[in-house]
Length: 337
Image 1 (cartoon, rainbow, N blue to C red):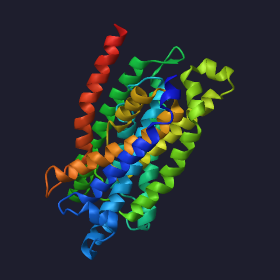
Image 2 (cartoon, rainbow, N blue to C red):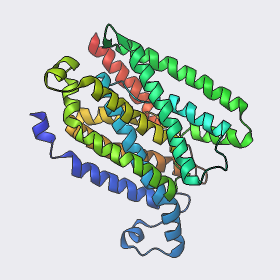
Image 3 (cartoon, rainbow, N blue to C red):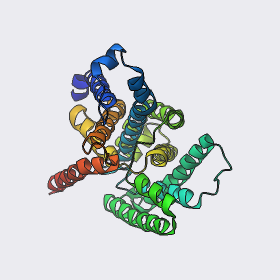
Image 4 (cartoon, rainbow, N blue to C red):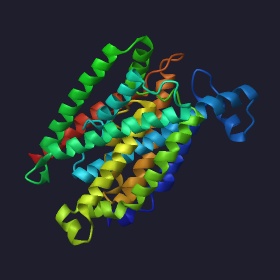
């Protein structure tokens, strides 16, 4: 009855929230622009230049990345059937970041490829790191043929530690310019978003998000358990491989272009399930919308809290997500006692 009651409610509400948050993001910053002028398209040339070259591509990047991270979290939670699963906590983001860090420090393609091709090389490197990490997590978390939550968290802790050590080594080996790039990238930042980067990210993430939405029914079958899903005609092993590839590609692309942004994939799907139930036909699109709104809000806060400077958006999401994770962990502990 819960799905029947709420299935028609969330989409307009979440779309309105995203529109309001997006409008606020366009008008706020070190240089404020009137929201009335934006809505009425009566802005002057200077304001138009700021909107079109800086704020609008940054807003679109936040929407794409927030949606991708939230959907990736929903996929991992469906795959492991655990609300604590998240690309950041399990080390997928860290694994992807190591490969991008190697590309930044070693930089074997410097000057040999055009800018758009170098952007795709970062995505490929991050994708390879995310795929390898997902595969390791999946193998290490198995216990007697089943995914163990304890092994899952332990594997994530170990991979995060190893990735942190590798990133530290890369930092030690880097020069001043590479060190600056590694530092800002590791904390997560949307400030470098330009139309060219947005086009690359959109060309990869939008088809993936559409594919995941189409797989919502199969995700519901997987929540019933692997044996039940097989009886209902789902090729479970092939489907899990596809899910891992989608998560790896989503995380790889976001890490490549915006750095490490944590906790979006943990918070958003859990909040959606609390409000609207566990039906993935609702969870997936609503997670995308709420994830886009949450990251846009966090990025706006990062820009206005310390004007004229700005905070890395990854720090803001960590400040929000850390207490949320502790609350979720305590909630699960009390539920098992």
